[in-house]
Length: 157
Length: 272
Image (cartoon, rainbow over all chains, first blue to last red; front, top):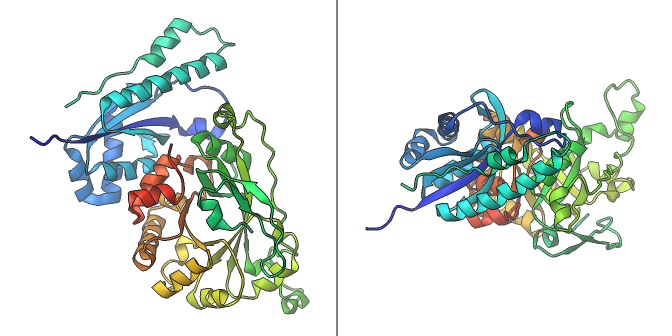
C-alpha cells in the first residue's frame, strides 16, 4: 500500500509582549493554553485564508502537540498535500486564546526522527542560553534542565 | 544605487553606483541572504528602528535595508514655493540616510557564526509624475542611499518613467492604490524587467488588515499572470517587531502570492 506521507512543522511561539520589549531576558513562562487551543487557532486561520476548502482538507491527519511547554515549542502534523495550506497560514497566527503571540517556523520535516534530532539540538542550545541569562538568579539547575530538555513525542499515526 | 540584480544573484559583492546619468563610482559592498529590504524608519510610536533591526537579526536575516519614505508632494516646485501661503510638511531636500550603530551583542546568532549583518539604506519615493527627477537630480543627499524604490500609482506615470533614462531598483505599491492603479500588461512588466527593476511584495499588510490582504494577494496574482512572477522580492514593511516573520515563514507565504515553492525560496530569503 502506498504510504500516507506527512509533514511535521516545528514552530516556536513567542509572546507578543516579550518581542515588543526586546529586553534580553529569557522567557521561560509557558503560554496559558493547551494543545487544543493552538490547534483551533491554526484551523481558524486556515479557514480565514483558504475558506471551507482549506479547513476541510487539512482536517485529516491534523494534530498539534506541545513538544515543550517551557520554551513554547509546538509540533504540527499534516498530510503531505495540504501541508502548504497550513504552512502559509502559520505566519498569520497572532492570537492563541486571547494571548498575543508571534510564531516562528523552525523546521519542516517529513519524519518524526529528524524533527526529534532538530529539537534536541535546539533545546540544548536554549538550555545553554538560559543558564547564561539566569546565572544571577538562583535557579535550580537540575529542574531547569528537566524543564527544557523534556520533549514530548507526537504519535506516529 | 546598487545594481539589485547582482545583489540577488548571491554574489558576495555588489556595485554601489552614484548617479544614474553621470559617471559611476563603484564601491563594493558585501551582502548575503537572507535579506529583508524594507524596514521603515517611521515605525509605530511604541518602538524604535533599533528594536526592529535587532528582532530581524534574531529571526535570521543577514542583510537589512532601512527605508525612508518620501512623497513627491513634499517637494515644492518653484511655482509653489512662491505661493508662501501653503501649509503642510514640506521638505527642502531629501532626508539624510539613517545610520545605525550595532554592537555584536545586538546580533548574537550571527556573531556566533563569525558574521556581521549588512545594513543598507533605502529611499522610497511616491511619485505622481516625472517632475520628481528635478529634485532628485539636484540633491546630493539622495544619491547617498544604497537602494532607490519608486512607488507608482498609475500607468501613465509608470510609462513616462520607463521612457526616461532614469534607473531605479525597486518598484513598490500601496495596497490602497491597487484597484485604481497601474494596469499591468506583459509589455509593461517586461520593460521593467529589462531595466533591472525588482517588484516588491510586502507581507506585513497581509498580517495587519484583512482588506489589505485581499488587495495585496490580488496584485501578486496579477504579477504572476502577467509576468510569471519574475524579478519579485518579498519585504516586510513591518511597523512593529510583531509584524516581522522569519525567512522560512516568508518563503511559505510566497505560495499564496502565486509563486512556486522554489521561486518563493529564492525571491526573498533563503531558509536555512
